[in-house]
Length: 163
Image 1 (cartoon, rainbow, N blue to C red):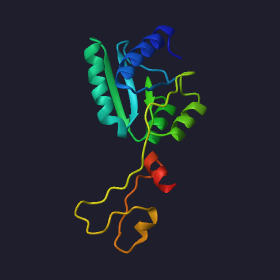
Image 2: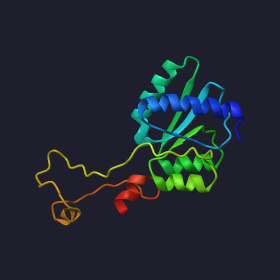
Image 3: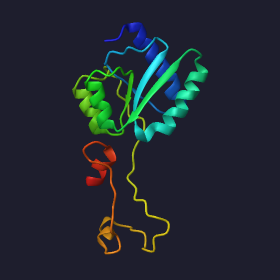
Image 4: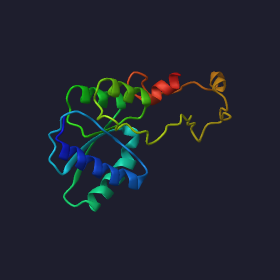
């Protein structure tokens, strides 16, 4: 458990940074070794661009502060936290992973917030001569030979696709 001052600073810092961006993130219970002016953020790889931009803006607005990012698939990030990785904020790409973090007692009480949503899309090569699919069953037509998805065991988009 972090000292109350650290938690208060973290809460205020995140409130300012992520309110300004319209996003929220989730403080975790894991013990951190980060310096007082450093936030360690483990976030889903899909958030890389947005969080990097938010982090730069936050550091500019708060001289002396620093955000260290760890971007990866949500499942491996949770595994790192479960194994004691020092993390101040965990931002998963799906509810299932956050449920596991919550059930494992890894989130600071009352800190969980939904801050974004996902939408599954199908991307078709621009050079394709096939009519774009409008329904899932269209992908069973002979012209569609390969469909790539994320790994359902480790990334949320894989689980969404499988469903």
